Length: 106
Image (cartoon, helix red, strand yellow):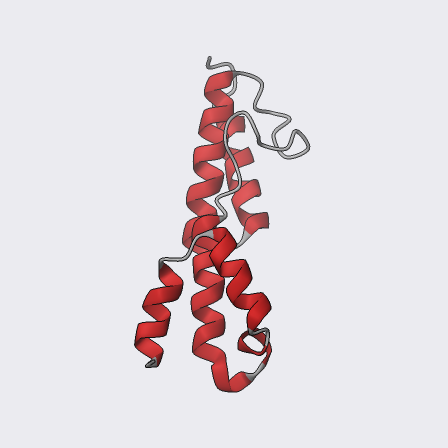
């Protein structure tokens, strides 16, 4: 199978399929020869792992999100920044900033 076909296959995998794939061939993440696979696997993992919803966001990150509207804004912002940048810390900081600016709004 060509690399391009393999990348397309990875892009369609579910979380369980991706985990099985990596466990079956861990060298894809560690061997520099397979750098393209490493990138494709990491990208797909990030796409599948948008971690925050208004009800499931960790309270240690969302202390300022005291209303349902603020929690919704926080999770939407954090997920969008994470998807764009891949930086979880940055996503949390920006989401907290957005919620802080909504001060007093319900």
